[in-house]
Image (cartoon, rainbow, N blue to C red; front, side, top):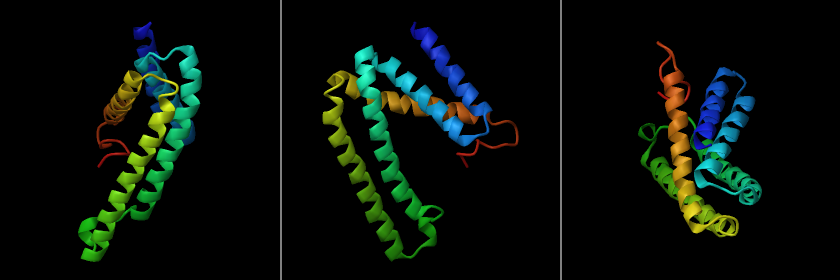
Length: 153
């Protein structure tokens, strides 16, 4: 069963990159991520039905915090700024990291009402592993002369 789910995951990831439409591709990536996390945490059907909507809410808040920070500094390079702007970036970056920590603390209590402490501890590892798999697929999917895909430099 585990091998079957991993195969499904690989197929989903592979087909995601075959589509040029970003919105549809992002939905497929999200579906693959949820399948990976559900499998990795060994969620029961009841846990899964309660966890997935909560996790989706968590992800929306993470994206909001990230977009707020990244939008402010998109295209900016610290070496191209003066000391005051660089200091502002450092402070804003620390505020961003603190907001992410606060969000995780707030959601940890909510997650623990649905999943066990072990599953929660494994959640962050599963997210990291999925990101690594995704990056590897992106990098391997780039053909000769195409660099490392549209996300890398």
